[in-house]
Image 1 (cartoon, rainbow, N blue to C red):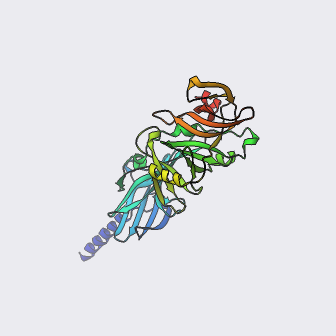
Image 2 (image 1 turned 120 degrees about the horizontal axis):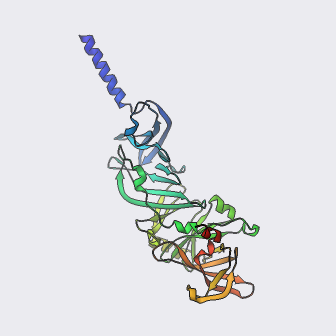
Image 3 (image 1 turned 45 degrees about the horizontal axis):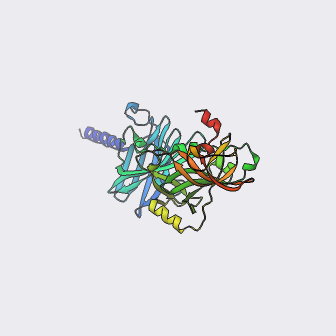
Amino acid sequence: MKKILLLLLLITISMVCRAKEPCTNKTFVENYQFNINTQPYKFTSYLCEDKDKDEDDDVFLTPGILEIHGKNFNKTYKNVIGMAGHRASMFTQWNDKHKPVFFYSLKDIIAHIPIIIKDNNLMVNCIYINKSLENSIELNYSHCGNLQIIEDGFGEEGFDKLLRDFYLEAIYYFSNFTENKESLQYKKFDVFIGKIDGISFYRRYSSIKDYKLNKYTVVMVNKGKEYRFKPEDEVYQRIVDRSGSQAIIGLDIVDSKGNIKFYNKKALSALLNKSTIKRNITSYIQYNEKTKLYNKPSHRSATDMYLVQHDSVTILDEILYKGNSLVIWYKISYNSKKHGKIIKWIKGNAFFPMREISSD
């Protein structure tokens, strides 16, 4: 009888131990260690290839597990990371910046979601998104909301519910610089990407080659000055839940060490006020027909003068259509061989090739 009881006890202990084992067939095992709030934490993530699970109960077709161990913090998270079709969610560090994040991808979107440990919970509240557009340009934006606790069974939506629609994409579509003229290949140019009231943001490319490689420096300007962010910084436009140009409320700057600082309009104005660099925004006419010049931002003020494709102009100001992000007028300066320096207005599609317009 004692032997039977001992055998039953061993079986029970074995079953309990097995129940504590979250996965028996681990793949892509990654180990990290981070200091969060001055406390060390060990993170272990892996995909679970166990075949005896009911796939209908899984959020991911290939589920993953995240283990976090620290002082008074030992938790195992399921249904938070894994892979399912075009969607993947993994734990990693942000671009070797030693910042713990969830790496999220969905078709043409990738995102980094920094993790927070607070009140003995794993939390997230901001998402930093890179979206690839049809013209090969990447759109960078961020969104922050309420702190959300990450628990087992994060839900079928997963991190999808943190994503927000971004309605300023049209600005990027209005840039498609071609390499069909040798003289343009090694000249710098600027591409408009957004505006907060009187503060505008441009991407500065040193050449068309850098444009194709997505290498740029973000420049912000008012009507008199410009301020250049460091090339090694990652710059994200912080958006809120509303459409059009009013969606931008500031910039998130991520430095090479992974530190994130949000600049609202007041902080951005302060940076501009400290700058001693005179505004010098230039770009090329892309419209492949004659670009008419106007005395005012009005169709009734047309002149007999015009520009042609690949003429270089200095951009002095831009006017966005009310309610969305489309630039409808640019104020420009152009050095004419016949008339000298002229300051006029051109339509917003001057930096958009006609062949792209006709394809819509």
